[in-house]
Amino acid sequence: MTATPLLSVEGLDVAYRTGKELTRVVDGVSLEILPGQVLALVGESGSGKTTTGHAILGLLPENGVITGGVVRYRGEPIQSLPPKRIRALRGTAISLIPQDPTVSLDPVRRIGHQIEDVLVLHTSLDATARRSRVLELLELVGFSDVEQRFGQYPHELSGGMRQRVLIAAALAGEPDLIIADEPTSGLDATVQAQVLDLIDDLRRRTGTAVVLITHDLGVAADRSDLIGVMREGRLVEVGPTREVLDDPQDPYTQQLLASVPARLELVRERAGENAADAEEDPVIEVADLRKEYAGFAAVDGISFSVRPGRTLAIVGESGSGKSTTARVLTGLTEATSGSVSLLGTEITGLSRKQFRPLRRDVQIVYQNPYASFDPRFDVHAVVAEPLRAFSSGARRGRSARREHEEKVVAALEAAALPADFVRRHPRELSGGQRQRVAIARALVLEPKVVVLDEPISALDVSVQAQILELLRDLQDRLGLTYLFISHDLAVVRAISDEVAVMRHGRIVEQGEVAGVFTDPSHTYTRQLLDAIAGRGLTTEGLRAHVKERA
Image (cartoon, rainbow, N blue to C red; front, side, top):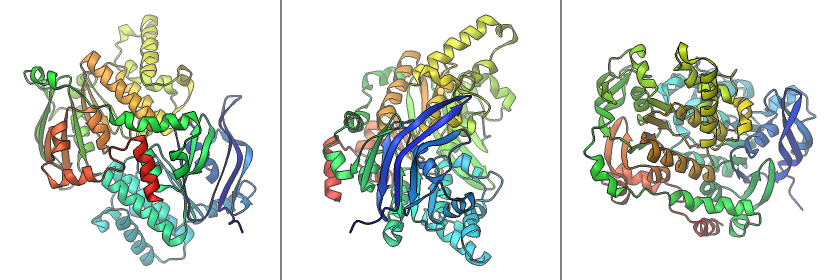
């Protein structure tokens, strides 16, 4: 007897309304998942993965509409249920781990209370039991000092920590089905493995099924029973993970598999340039930098320098101090002590007004781009915003507007975004597309220094390779200097000249990438390298890995 699917999707069509027009973004998607199974949805940014997940939950944006097909939960069509019944399903029967924690968390409420909200809505636990359960969940998703974390606000946590809070909230009601939308995209390798292990454990204990939306084929291969490959809104291939990776039938699936080793092969060969670089003064120079929050040292006495045209990567676990370092360097946070020099200017002690002249030359690409966009702006306005901000009164006429238009178009093209995206709003874009818009905005002023805070963490492997090539090309042509913050050591190996490994606010190891990666001297660096899922896998390696798991 065939088991009844927990979830079935039949001929799903979804469109976004722009004015009087409907643009189809999901086209005839059909799939099903049994209790306890993991279905990975993979594909390029904008392929319809996230929209499919949100349609299943009935959480499309206001301009999103299901134009065809049916979604069934345990055989019952969800669309026909009254709104109260659908709301009751969320959190207990079906739960969402969103992609962007900055948007999903309330900035003025403590994280413990935000996780507790799920228990208030869906359980009969009293206040004491609810608090105990929240502390347990925080510990399960990898937090230490859980009592302290309970009372913190989202802005006091790193991006990876905020993502773990969302995972804890999604797991609170022990749902039958979890829609996990890039649940580990902001996490370092060790915490990624821990979180995925946690979801696997819940699945084994309770029979929870998971729809895992991911751009990481290594994660999909390691963690799924089924894979669905999406392109331009269509499900071009779906089947058991082993079969799809062992013998992909669709050319696009074959292309995605080929992109896995392509990213790993983007290793710099710059040994001939190092001697010349060593003679130049650093454009970034940090000495004994310390940043405290309420007596806690998020950055604890670090020192490093970056010379013109070079890339220094900072790696480490979530909460290690990477993003705090970036905020100090870009004038968004004041240092507690120490010295920071940018382009020959000492910035510690400068007011925001005094720092402003440096902003044209020092730009940042944020980890969570959506939170940095004005929701009223379309893509053109978002990318053009820095140009307007740095235009003098004499440069705001017709010729300036024409020049701005050309620079915006060039920046979007460089970031691999189609020209017709200029009139879309960020809410209409996938996470990966938003991240490319953020890259275009940072590059439009042609800065000298770019701080890249997890700039490709939400992108699929083929676009990751494209963006890395873009960043390298821009650096080679324009002499850009990068501070590259990432939890993905394969990406760090591809883009960087030097690497600094951070832990608990300190740099525990730094040096040339080749030396640190091939002969790490610190135990923690070795742990990070060992935790990379699918490290060095080729297409054949991926397939062998899946066969071994099966």
